[in-house]
Length: 163
Image 1 (cartoon, rainbow, N blue to C red):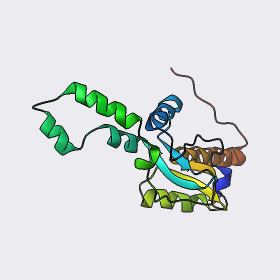
Image 2 (cartoon, one colour; image 1 turned 135 degrees about the horizontal axis):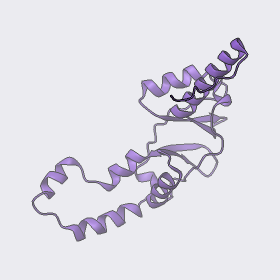
Image 3 (cartoon, rainbow, N blue to C red; image 1 turned 90 degrees about the vertical axis):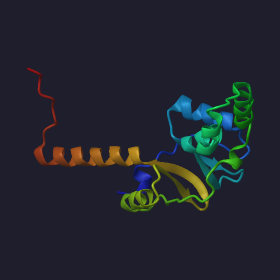
Image 4 (cartoon, rainbow, N blue to C red; image 1 turned 180 degrees about the vertical axis):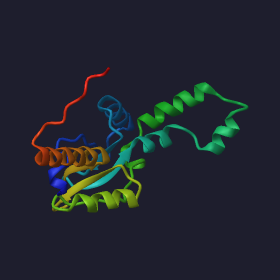
């Protein structure tokens, strides 16, 4: 099975100069955990994830411990607003692992597992052409398994009624 058979081609993207607020909105609204960051020429510039947004929004643990005794919520509120107006380029991951559309799914999965990532941009001629997520792979493998089982038995799998 090839990456192009499973990848998503209608994906949301952001630009490096997009506001972090826009990323947070897209992630929440579309229930996705990360977005490719695309340069004007269509090339992949980076990836920004929920974790990147959360790291930007919340203080480091040392800062949090110090704040336990003297939290200034008004200051935190204005800092939150400042972070939401920051640019994606300040928080995105720029070292991006990619695969090609003609790569085997197994290669893509190996890269994702090795680097502990849940989605990987699909690039052809340096341009973003799709994205492959762990969920896409699970669905494809499940479909292939059912299709194979159906081909052997000639019957559709059915649910047994509850008793």
